[in-house]
Figure 1 (cartoon, helix red, strand yellow):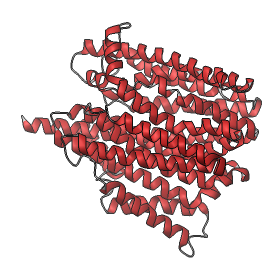
Figure 2 (spheres, rainbow, N blue to C red):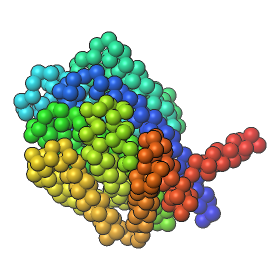
Figure 3 (cartoon, rainbow, N blue to C red):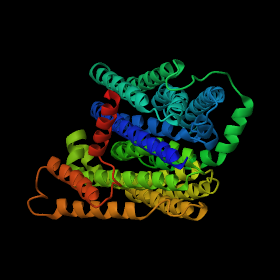
Figure 4 (spheres, one colour):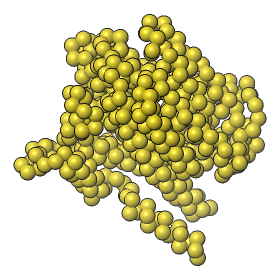
Length: 498
């Protein structure tokens, strides 16, 4: 019996890693296309209009407070069960609930910009772009269904195609109608394509029963009760990530909002890498708890190693060349945001590891304390912003983000250590080793004669590739490598042909 269980666990682990690769490749591609779209928009709009564009999507991002039920244990645990009829009913009810939350989020976003007294352009742009929230919220529910089956390859492909559609429409808008109210429309098309791809696959019964059934009030109540602490905690995390944009919009200028938001385009790469790792590994954590403590620990520590390595590579590649890169991509007027961008990428790296810790707590159902930690982090962030924005504008907001994310990371690690019956689930070794390697490589690229004055693409490649190689050689990637994954694919193909 035990050998069979080990084989199943090994298979699940390999599928989780394969899903991670698919999601990581797609998320990087999506972020790159989104980045290019933002460059085109920033270059085609005035500073004030680009600030309004950034502000509108910043407000919509905050609507996760209302719309994000989170991958609650009650939902994911039922979706990984064996009762196909129950899976179909739970999936359908979850989608309906997310749609209702999306409509509420849309109404709240409109209310925010109206009540806070913004001008007609901002209100109109929010009314149009807010449809993204209505569509994306149930679409994410479909992603959770695929996640429960560890079949995220189709999701990855569909989201890349959707982002490609958005980029093409953005290029067309920039060429023929470079107006604020027109440039928010491509994001809606993106969500429609993504939703269509996932819905079509699920309705055809791809890799499991298709969602069927209507609204189940009792199940909604159970989902919401289970999700209350999770949703509140994640809501505070989302608000912490976006509230500085709102505060800058009220306490400073829209030009400052635009300069600050540029940094988020780089930190988004860290965020998408984190999601690509955490999403499949969360399924693995839920499936292994509480019966397989060793498997649970292995999945958590491997996810931490991969996230730490990816964050270190990103920071080491960007830090030495931020000024040159911003000037090259966005123009000279955005180069002043280089230090802010560096700080936001560092903050996002700490936030990525904190997010993994939160998902570990979710997987074991021990997530009723951490909302207090995220609330404290949010209050710290707001207090620092209120003090720093008048003194340092958007750079002050960047420092506020670094401090609040550092507090949250330490707090979550401590909570995981003291609240779980399994010891050594998260180790400080992986992030500390990754930080030390990244800092060493950054120092080398910025201070070594002959390297510091080399072309910025060379320094960026040296920073990222050098960090990855050193981490891999000293075991910082926990055995994860592209070469290993290619080998697994070849073995699988050989077995199939045999």
